[in-house]
Image (cartoon, rainbow, N blue to C red):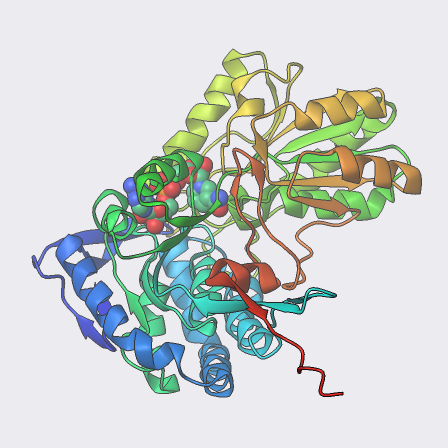
Length: 487
Ligand code: TXE
C-alpha cells in the first residue's frame, strides 16, 4: 500500500515512531494509503532542516528565488493529470473540478508569488526639514509554519507556502491528514525544480499531534493557518504567549443577497455553483440565500429545478458535478445539520438524502440540499455546515437584507445580486465581510487581499498582503548633517 512520507531536508522519510494513519478514498470508502503519523520529533527534524537552510535561502537573490518558484509552477502544470487524479481520489471531488480549478490554481500560486516577489518594495519616508530619512527594511521572519485544510488541498497548501518561501523564509508545513496526497507528491516536484533542501519541509500527521507541535514550537515564529474556527481559536491561544505572528483563515457562513432587480439568469446559474461547488465544502460558498420576496416563489421553483438536475456521481465520471463528501465523519456531521434544521422548522425543498452510486456503494454521497427557513437564529443559519446544504429566507427591504446578512458571528464573504449601483455601494460598505462579490462569485484576482472579519479570522493573505505577513518590517531612521558652510 502507498505510503505518504514526510518530506524533510529534501528527501522522503518515514515517521520516527513508525506509526501510520489510514487514508480513505471518499468515493469508495476504502483505505488506499497510509499516512505518516508524525510527532513533535519529526517536527523538530523539519525545524532543524529549515533553520539550517535559512541563512543561504534568505540570501538567495530575488531572481533565483523567482526562477525556482516559476519552475515549480511549470512542473505542477506538467503534472496536471496526475495531480488532479490524486486530488479526486483523496478528496472525493470531481476530477474535472480538480483539473479545472485546484491544480491550475496551485500552479498559479507559485507563478504569482514567483513574479510578485520581483515587484515587492518597501516605503521610504523623508522627514523634510529635519534631515532625516526613514526606510522600511523588510526581512524574512525565519522559520514559519503553514497548516492547511482538506477542502482545496493543494490549492490552499500552495497559497501559503509559495509566498512564505518567495519572501525568503524556510517552512515547516502540514497539510490536512484527511487529504495529504498532493502535498506528498509536491515533494518530488520541489526536488526536480531544484529548491534547496530544507527550504520547504512537509510533515504529515494529525492536527493535535503534528499540527500542535508546529504551533507550539518556540522558534517557529509565524503561523499561517486555514481551517475551522474552533481550531483557529485553539491555535491563537497556544501562540499568544509566544507573541507569534498569526494569519488565521477560518470558517464562513456567507450570505447571498438576491434583489429583484438583478440579472436573473446569471444569478440563477452562479447561485447553483456558489451553493454546491466542491460539494459545498468551500469556506466562500454562499450557504445562506436571502431572496427578495417579490421574486421568491419563482426563484425557489427555478433554483430547485436546476439543483435537481445536478449529476451526483463518482469523481471520475466526466459529467459528475457533485462528487463524494470528504469523509464519513463529515457526511454524518452534514446530515446531522439537516436533521437539526428540520427539527427547528426548516422545510426541505430538495435533497437531504444519501445517494447510492453504482459501483461506489460505500462512498460518501449526499444529495444537494435546499432548506427553506423562517428564523435567522436557528442553528443551520448560524453555524457552518460546510457541505452541500443551502438555506433560503426571504426579505422585503434592503435594510432587512443587510441586517440578516450581518446577523451571524462569521464575516468571510458576501455576494449581492442587483443592478442598482447605489445599493451596490451602500451594501459594499456595510456588509461585515472581508470580500464582497457583486453580481459574481469566487472571482479571484490574486493581487487582492483575502481574509475574513469577526470569527472568520484575522489577517489577510493574497498579493503583497501575504508578502507583508511573511516579512518583518523594520524602520531604519538615518539622520544626516549638511556640509559645513565654507563661505
Ligand atoms: O478542520 P481543522 P476539520 C471547517 C468546517 C469543518 C470544520 C472542521 O466547518 O467542518 O472546520 O474541519 C490542523 N494545532 N473548515 O476538522 O481541524 C488539521 O490537521 C494545529 C473550514 O478538518 O480545523 C488540518 O491540517 N493544527 C475550512 C487543519 O488544522 C491543527 C476548511 C484544519 O483542520 C490542530 C476546513 C491543532 N491543535 C474545515 N488541530 C476553511 N475555512 O476553508 C487541527 N489542526
